[in-house]
Length: 220
Length: 213
Image (cartoon, rainbow over all chains, first blue to last red; front, top):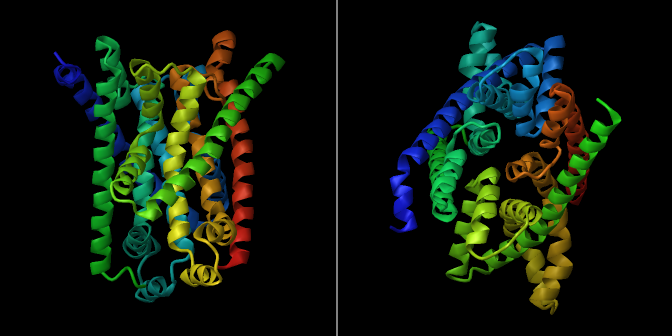
């Protein structure tokens, strides 16, 4: 039996790893995105909280993802807060990438022309409504290449969770190679899977670009 | 946190620094070579390099490190852990650097190239004396940014048992049974190193802005 057919035989392990990776990735980027928008809204309001948030975002930008995952998984257990590896990993992903999303949106918010916001205020929109219906959609379409990059970073960061014993795709490749001793085919398959997911993400971003162009967001 | 724990942390920081520093330096040169080859548009080679860059950018570092560590012996290569870590980080960062260099290439003013060639420079002289000095300045902010990213993903080498700044916290807490202080201390050291890099990046941006190409 060739090595490749062994990988096919062991497909259930790899597929369950793929499933966990996709699930962790989707759940964490949705969470991170909402956290990022919330932080942006709070930054917009200003005050001491905004100042604290700036500090938090800058801290996250200066830390490797794995250190945050270690902090939540190993560090917090000292304070009696024990989480299983998947929960800690998911939480770390949400917090870490939430800060990055907030930073991306904030950067674009600083250069957003005030015209549309002033028009909305003149029409009597409430601040929350302006943020949700006027500011956020514009920021999203403007920052989509950066958001696309961040999604790819987030996908790649899920593999760090293998180090804190989450059984995701990289850990699954390792399990397969350890059982049958076929490191080459197992990892080639997994790397191609990561590549495929990245390609899908890139495709989605370019589709969003076409949508943005159609709605006239490109030449503002 | 005892003095011994701090010493261990600093040793871990040193491992992180020299491995990512070496990989970064090699990645700069290899990235430039890839960008040069790709602008030459040699048939087949160009496509192979495009696939290489795309694959290397899409592969998570943890997966790449583990793959090289496990698959190298089956190909008859005997690499120790440090060599595997350096090779993996170099593959990763060279792919990102190649794209940065290539952008600098593509955006290089055409009139300068024509002027240089019209003055009788050979393409090699033109590249070394006209293009490269300006390309270095324009790509520097992006390259330093990529170094920051490399440093932030360097804890991936922990998966093959290298004791870097992240992994060393496990060693310390295995003795003290208190994981929180060493992790926070490691975070602090990372923040110091990365803020130095961010400072360098803003300096590089100022320099590139002054050139105003």
